[in-house]
Image 1 (tube, rainbow over the protein chains, first blue to last red):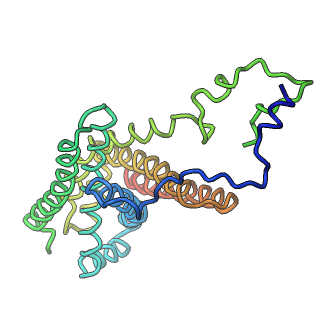
Image 2: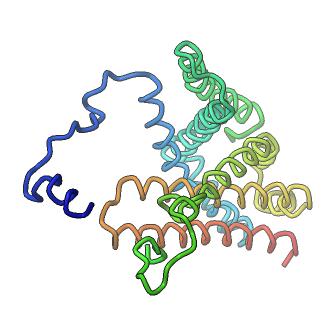
Image 3: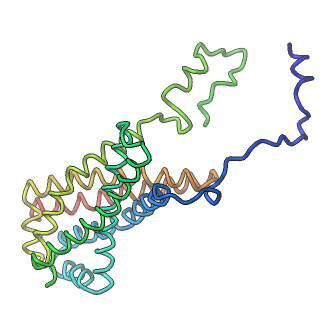
Length: 143
Length: 138
């Protein structure tokens, strides 16, 4: 047995030409592919953005002076853009994640279904972000 | 990595079949536990999102005294603690997946995973400490 196997083996130096798995550049871009990357990117952004949440809570626990710094930052133009972006990342990642739950449960794999789910996450994420900020400004957040 | 018994020496034969050795473990040697926890924490955050947003809305444009008072109420504190716990765990798992996908150098990968754990625990503990401090009113 051993002897026969040894003779059948190709020499170690010979390079066997095997088909390579095509990488991302090879594929035609699809919506689900692009949004898969967006899901990951928003996840990374939210990871870094938790520092804002920590800063806010620690400042609230530290006292009025520390809290005033957070409020000064969040009402500045840059701060407001960051918090707006954070809101969108959170809403998009949540809806995109719900889409993953649907797939985890075994539904929504047909071409039109997965496209609809993905468009839903994309449009829903933007819509929820705008809605939240309208409520926030109506609620006195613009002060 | 070092738990591999598949090359077991003839002196120490394993009774376990190759399938038994890998079952429920996979490449990460921790099986599907992270996958499952990622889902649990994701569902938890989805359920907690509306209460968490309501709390943040309540505090917009208010001063520290009002914020501290609101954050120290029991329902608010508990909702935020749950949200933070789920977030920290979820992001720890998510970032680990990203690291494992893109960092191929073994030492760099282990360092990055370690830093990811430190960061996630620090985020969770700092937030928890702040909420508990507010709740205890000191």
